[in-house]
Length: 412
Ligand code: CTP
Image 1 (tube, protein in one colour):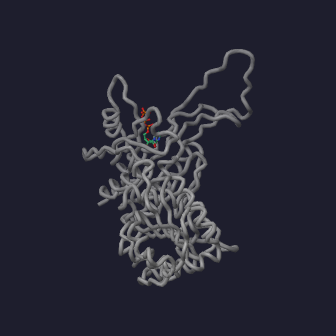
Image 2: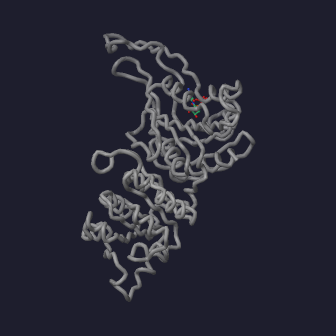
Image 3: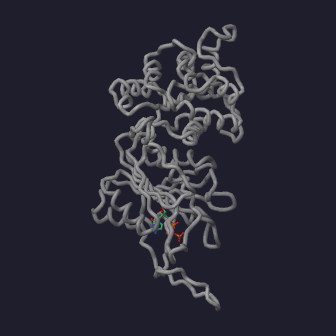
């Protein structure tokens, strides 16, 4: 999507307590310049009043098909939309949509929509796991709708388990990805187990100081989030990030140092279909960690002796050669490159792919406003089989979707 391009988005709101989160989602869409029509169900209005939806979207709100009849809203809203997002989608709403009911404005709109449709389910765990709901989700997916995986966590009351509506930021990210690329969320990684590392490591110097880097973790988190939404069982080994929320339906293992990351990656890589090393792992660490805070003293500072950390990616490739890791485990590396007097970004990246021995290398061109702490990336995707594809400038979610396409093709 062009930055700032205005799209017509219908936000359907089902009758669940999570309806309150749709307000923040609607706001994200309107702040991004999109035109939003909100269509709640009657029961959604038990949770959030229509005045709130009207004020947030700047448009009138109706639940039935007999208001504003001359404008034929039950046909027009669906036909004209660029995206329909239903959040929260209750068990009842999924059932009605799956069976083609058209007994209110929202379900009628779902039957006329020609654009991508994304359902974000939210309900109690028992209802989510019930075979009736699972069948309804399968029907909707088989017809091309995107039904995203709910988050796990605290539901209304004391219950925990899958069924929670992901946070508005996450819903906004997935919806924005569908606007960028309508086919970005297939269920083509179902049955795959994928390990993703993300974020930066911190190498302690003393109890209050460390050597770190500027990695935000956004690219790795985007890959983990999308892999889970494409059906994979995902473990995210997370170093230090810019305070990112754990993605829905992803197991997160938190680590701090490169050594902790190596141990966690090696453990979870066993039996995985793919390991994606998006983390910015420190190449070196201080040779010793002072047990008390280092004082500045009077003279010039001491230099800090460093020792090399293990290269986790190279270790995975070696483990696969030795048979400790299955030959079928795909290994994906990342490289942040600038050109220099020895070669351009691409020639450095080709050499790194050779050196590291991984199957795919995602190359980010780094420079002003690129790669670090920003929301967009560009670069190349290099395959050990000699394939090279340019990754055009786009969101980190879009880049994640292209990386997963390449991985999917590699896995066969
Ligand atoms: N990596 C790793 N373990 C390390 C360092 C890096 O697994 N100790 C992984 C990163 O996660 C990334 C890839 O290796 O997937 C590339 O890292 P990079 O630091 O760019 O590679 P280097 O071989 O260290 O090359 P350079 O000389 O450019 O620093």
